[in-house]
Every structure is written in structure tokens, then in C-alpha cells.
Image 1 (tube, rainbow, N blue to C red):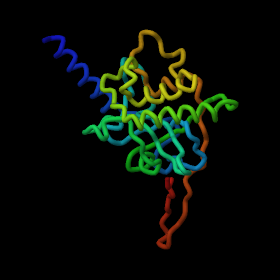
Image 2: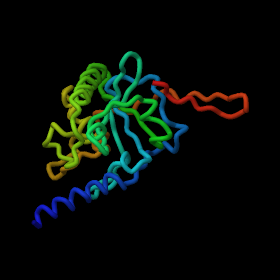
Image 3: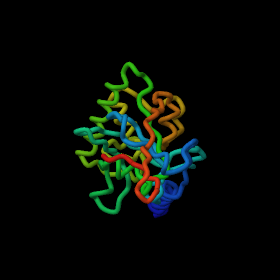
Length: 223
């Protein structure tokens, strides 16, 4: 009885941490700086700081800082950008790996800031991105459930950082890196950066224009 109760409380605590933790992204202060979809490639990794409780992931877990709340993989299909990511939902249709248009996922309504990374090795970045994106697309087609246990030992259920890690591992890149020791159980978004195998990509800023009323219009990605 104690074991079952303890397990349930642990799951509740984990979900609370993943839901209530805050995030910060150095140098990114608001929706005006959200990147557009121009210049994106399949396989790019987008790190986000979300607004909703459901989208906010760990900042402090087992004493480790994380600057990011959520992460997903970019796929380009027929010229349109999408983000494939694993996020908890209220029913089987959303409590799994999903694919959403860039303009929906990376918008001021959903997130406060975002950064884009891709493979640090320019000579193989395109191939790695293609393979990682294909793996992510397969996860989405298979409708893999969200991993509420946050375990790297269960490939048939995924959480956000695990999805990116497994997609890149399919391309021969282990984004856990040396910072992820044997004593660590949970893979955080910051671990992917600390691996040193990704580099940040500078994309064109949003386009600003003025309407007839003299108001500034920020053109966000239309994908």
C-alpha cells in the first residue's frame, strides 16, 4: 500500500514540477522577438518558454537549472513549417506526440520566447536534420503517448526532451552528452544544449509594418 501511494505521490510531484516551474531564456524578452519560420530546416530544434501550465517544463528538477520550458523538432512539409513535440493532454488525441503548424506553436499566445538550434557539424547538419525529422515524423504517425513517468527506458512513450534525443540518436547523435551522468534520470532541455552537439541559429527577425491607423504590425510566421 505504501509503495503504491508513494509512487502516486512521486508522479504527482513530478507533474507539479513540470507544470509549475518557470523558465528564462537569456537575451529573449518578449513576443516581439519570436523567430519566424523563414530559414528553418527540417530537424532544427526549437526551445521554447511557454505561458500555459501544461506547456511549462522543469526549471528546477533534482537541483538542476534549466533555461527552457519545452522543446520540439521542426519539420518542413510542402514548404510549410511544423513543430513535432510531446506534450501532456486531456485525452488520447492530445496526450501524445503531436504535430502543429509553426504559426500556432511559436506564437505570442503560446510562448514568450524561443531559440533555434541545429547540428553543430555543418558538414553533416543537413543529413542529420533530415534523419532526425524523419524519426520525429514517425513518432507522430505512430501517435506515441506522452511519457508521464519521464523515463528514458520506455521508447514507446515519450516526453519532450526524450523525443528530440531519440530523433537525433536515430541520426547517430547522442544529445545527452557528457553532462548527463549515470546518476541522472531525467533529461532536461538544457542537457541538449550542454552536449555541445547543437549550435544556435540566427534566423531573420519578424517583419514590422505600419497599418493605416499608424499602428505597428508584427508579421509572425505564416506556416
